[in-house]
Each structure stands twice: as C-alpha cells, then as structure tokens.
Image (cartoon, rainbow, N blue to C red; front, side, top):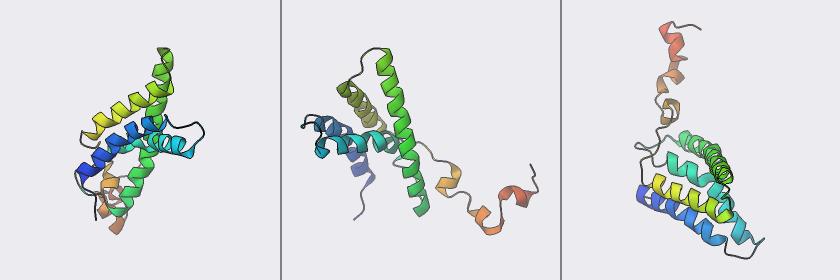
Length: 138
C-alpha cells in the first residue's frame, strides 16, 4: 500500500510535535532521544523536498533523502544560532521553532529538485553528455 502525499505531509507535520512530546520522557531513554534525533536530522529537509509534483525516479528518491539530511542540519544550525543570538535558546524553544517550520513547510509544495534528480537528463545516458553532442567545450 502506498502512502498518499497527504499522509506524508501530516506525518511530517506531526513528527516535530512528537519529538517535542518525547522530551517529557525520562532523560537518557532511547524513547526520548531517538525521535528528537530523527526529527532534527531529517524532518525539515523532508518537509521542504516532499512531496514533489511529479513522481521521482527510483534513484532520485535516495538522492532526495541524502539531500534532506544536510538541509535539515543546516536549518537546525541556523535556528540554534538565531536562538543563541537572542539569548533564548532552550531545547523546547529549538524544537518548537523547527516543528512550526516543518508544519508550515509540509503544507506547501516541495522545493523543485535539480533537473538531473527529476530525470530530465535521460538523453545524456544514451550518447554522452549533452554538451559534447552539441559541440560545446570548456
């Protein structure tokens, strides 16, 4: 059974609030840090990249997942820096900021991926690069 894009969006939006709720569990418990780590590592990036208007080719799904992690960690670093600059950093403030961002981003269409990821460069696989076929150098 395939997940509908609405289910994916709702799941992404709920993941941040689930991670925030997990912080109420006793410290050191894997039930506390695993959801928080998974959300901070993948949540914001997946919310920005998915769903895509067209289906991704099989290899592109892995590429989008690989792009989601550094994108998520970059957004987490920016959020943490901003909270430190206004002297308002706390775990709760950090997770609420990211969860709110993911909730809003999940309601919007995904950021377009590069053409190669969408599968627009299929001609290059048949006979070399498009630049070489057109006689373009350098």
